[in-house]
Every structure is written in structure tokens, then in C-alpha cells.
Image 1 (cartoon, rainbow, N blue to C red):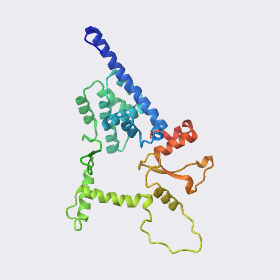
Image 2 (cartoon, rainbow, N blue to C red):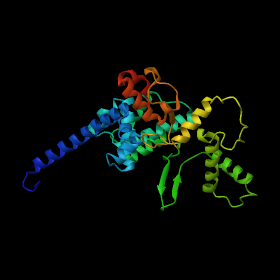
Image 3 (cartoon, one colour):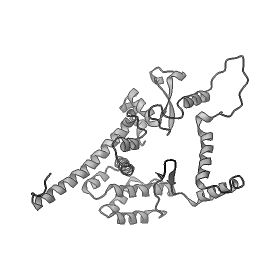
Image 4 (cartoon, rainbow, N blue to C red):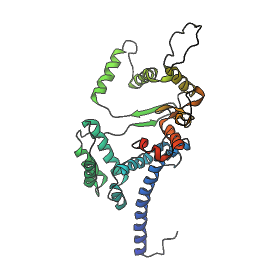
Length: 299
């Protein structure tokens, strides 16, 4: 496109129109993402989550994907914000700052801000620069400390760097644990301690690991009745603790391939392991989005 021959007024007018179209396209995209999430369509394409779909399928960088999904969730809760996005009064960065404030307030006050209070925050930061919006949100916080989102960053082929913000109470717990292990592991780093805590957590909470180290029982003449716990362990072991559709390890649930409501039984051949999103997508396909709608809100 050759812009050298158009007039100054035409150039300004076209630029203004492009900016307006760009903002409107953003809100249209957010509505489309919301509908993809509502239908759990990313599961059909074997993505683990909407975030995974946005990064791997739509090719957004992770930070941009996170900001768009955060804005999508906000629009669902506060439709009034859409007008402010279209007018340019607030950006995705403004939304991120406000969302961080909302999460922080819920954490420290144990109370969710009301819809009116959230709208007031957006009224205060609308039209402000990012730096001004940062000052306003920090001033509104009950505990005026910037809480940054958790971050996991690859630093080599075999190592990652994990950053998160926590309380001084957690620091005291870390020091207590390091003290308890000091004789056996005198120079234990936080990363090494975290590794040991993960092992303990997996052993305690992994359904496939339950009874893993139990002593074998003596054979009985009577056929052994398999308990529900054993059935659950077998399903997890067979699936290797991963969703059988997308490979996710998050919020795993046992699903009936042929739904019980449609005549399916609980025989092991009819059981599979799915993550929550893939399970919900399977239910949508079996029963329809209208029937499942009430079970999907807020997730």
C-alpha cells in the first residue's frame, strides 16, 4: 500500500478509523474467546485449556494470551467495560492492573469486591496513563504491595525458574521445615525443599499411588470384590495420570464413555480419565450446550 500520495487529512482520518476498528476487533475477539470457552471447543482440538489453545493454536505470546483471557473474563462479569475498551479509555494493561487489585483484595480481605466497586475502579483509571493507573490501584489496595502473577521461566534444557509472591508466614514455615531436615540435609535449598514437598504431596493425593506400598494380601478362596477406590486407582494407572483426550494433568475426573444417563454402566471398559474441561466438552456433546449451560458458568 502506497501512502505517500494521500493528503494529510486523509492519512489522519484513515489512521483514526484503523484505531477504532482495532479496538472493536479486540472486543469482538474477546466475545469469540468466551464462546470457545463456553463450548469447551479447545478440548475437541485436544488443547488442555483456553490458554493452551490461545498460545498454541492462535499463536499469541503467553503474556498477550493471558491478558486477553483476563479481559474476556472481565467482560463477562462487567459488560460496561466494553464501551471503555472501544473508546480507548482503558487498555488490556489497565484491565490487568484492575484484575490484580481485585484478586489481591479478595485474598487479603477474604471478600469479593462488588460489581459497583469494580466499576468504580475502572471509572478512576479510565483515560489515565498506565503509570497513573498503577498509582491509583496501589493506593486503593488494603495491603499496598504489588502482587505479581506467578511466573515459570525456562533457563536451560533441564531447569526452570519459578517466581511467586507469598506471605512472611510461609517464609517462617520454610525455615521451620529446613530446620527439621537440617541433620539429614544440612544445606537444603528452597528448590530442593520444594522438590521433596512435591513428592510428599503426590504420595498423599495421587489416586494412582494409594496403596502403592501396601503389603500384599494373602490369596482368598472367595472372589475379591473390587472397591470403588480400587476402580478409581486402576483408571488413573491405566491413563498414566493424564487426560486421555488432551494429556492434561489438571483437575482429572473419571468419566463414563457411554454416559450413565444414556444407559452406560460402570464397568472398567466404560471408564476413562478426562480433565474437567474435556469431561465438560464430552457432556456438551452428549446432552447439548443448553442443558449443560448451568454447570459451566464461572469456569
